[in-house]
Image 1 (cartoon, rainbow, N blue to C red):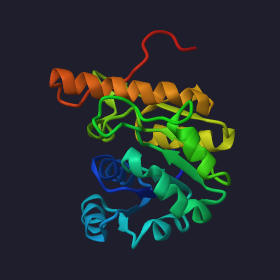
Image 2 (cartoon, rainbow, N blue to C red; image 1 turned 120 degrees about the vertical axis):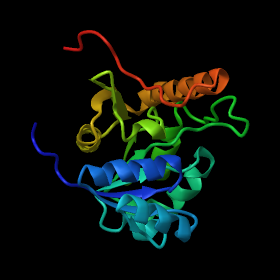
Image 3 (spheres, rainbow, N blue to C red; image 1 turned 180 degrees about the horizontal axis):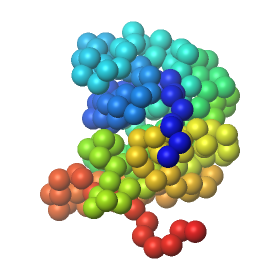
Length: 215
């Protein structure tokens, strides 16, 4: 397998997803910077995962090739407005899920939540990815010897190639789901997996994999 290109990745968010993604990305050889509302939290995650702790979101994205939003769905708009000038021309990955306050449904204004993010970041290449993967599987993307699928959606072909390469470098099988319109399906897939684990008291380790011929 061809050696993956090293990327400079900025992660906004140091919760379960942000910390797990930081660990997986540094483990794959990428350079990672982490930002969080609490700088102390960012420092703890950075120390644990081998990343750099940023002073704030804008500091984190400076010099980054890829910016990942790994924050709660209800703060995505605020983070996007804060970052908009700093992420012009950059690939922005939306790893969030727009859960409502009671976690009983999705809170979506447009066809997909990521389309709202795209509107807030008109000068960035926005791609939906990683939202269908539980934090606990970001570092273990295989099940019974088969790679889990890393679905992604976006309207910019070059940005999608970057995200596909990132997914592959972490051990996932990249699956191009289409344009941002198809991100609605990815958000619903994530909601379904979340709901099943919550309702059945599963251990939050289930993941998506398409079976059968794909070529």
